[in-house]
Length: 181
Ligand SMILES: C[S@@+](CC[C@H](N)C(=O)[O-])C[C@H]1O[C@@H](n2cnc3c(N)ncnc32)[C@H](O)[C@@H]1O
Ligand SMILES: Nc1nc2[nH]cc(C(=O)O)c2c(=O)[nH]1
Ligand code: SF4
Ligand SMILES: [Mg+2]
Image (tube, rainbow, N blue to C red; front, side, top):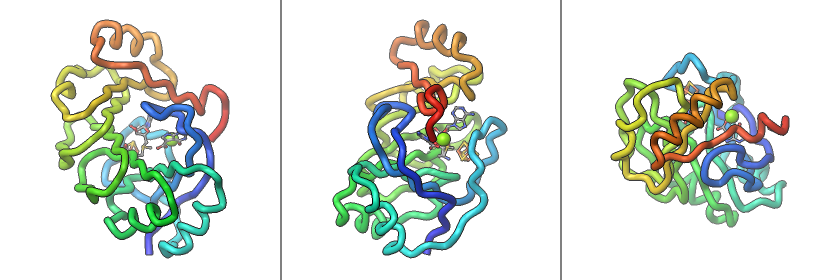
């Protein structure tokens, strides 16, 4: 059984797959307490893999996004396989502090300041911008580097930083801009 906060259908609002219809599986709880975290994730109910796949399969999209809270605390290879058997493309949003099963299709790593990364495979890096030095993340083994304003509040500073560091691209939380989930 896995503790689920919510399962909902929306568009990926952030990063490389922005605009892609996706089913979000939000797992409950996290090992970090980022002061800026925009998600209430502590509540949850225990669900079986069968019930999770049934709920996910109500929606027509192929893309599933595992998020939270911190989804890596709850998942394993077997769970990702269940979603693959249902025809899904499995993405994860992770803080990178906990190892991942190697059969996930797309890894979005959002490293947090002062916290050691434990994952070695990632497709994109997505940093929430708080004015920190972002060059320390540039050696991570990702193909894409995104800088995201914090709660849509420091967009001008984030644009300025991206223009100074052209390895990076701007990621807006587009779901917040158009008031969808
Ligand atoms: C809620 S977290 C859940 C997944 C995982 N715990 C993580 O941090 O990557 C999902 C994404 O939202 C980002 N995020 C959280 N709070 C934010 C905020 N206030 N503004 C912008 N992005 C935020 C995180 O950095 C992460 O990329
Ligand atoms: N639309 C939408 N896109 C998202 N991308 C990452 C999210 C998350 O909370 O992990 C998120 C979210 O909460 N909503
Ligand atoms: S790691 Fe992710 S879910 Fe956990 S507190 Fe930070 S932003 Fe929120
Ligand atoms: Mg969110």
